[in-house]
Length: 152
Image 1 (cartoon, rainbow, N blue to C red):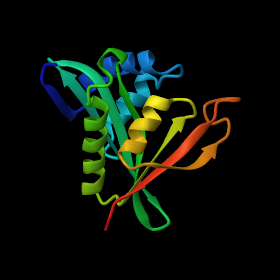
Image 2 (cartoon, rainbow, N blue to C red):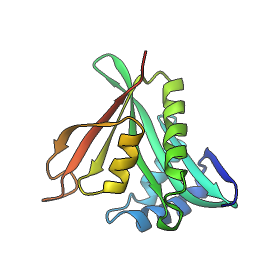
Image 3 (cartoon, rainbow, N blue to C red):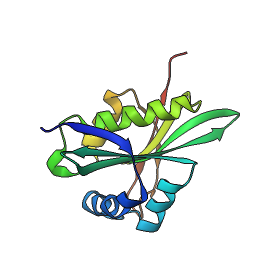
């Protein structure tokens, strides 16, 4: 595989990010929301490039919950042809590092029940299933609430 590069997303990347969203999810985030993720200081938007082509992305946000800073992983996705090459792992670790630098000591995310490759990745990186989100992705489409705490 050609060299992998993880970098901050820019507005010029939004159309490609939307294409990846559509390739990875039934209900993709619209370009306008992706543009907000990229331009707002509240969010961290990263892209993964292989040979100068964007093949994945990750978005997170620092939130306040019960007087502590928590990193919310909004999305993590890699095009199917580039999966199982460590790209998702590198994206998630880079996102966690940036959120931790902003003060996050815990991270959480939601993942669709049945998305075993994603669940496996998250568990491998220390996330635990702590709850079920009934109908989170629509009627009958449940999700898991997963959390990871940093060692202090």
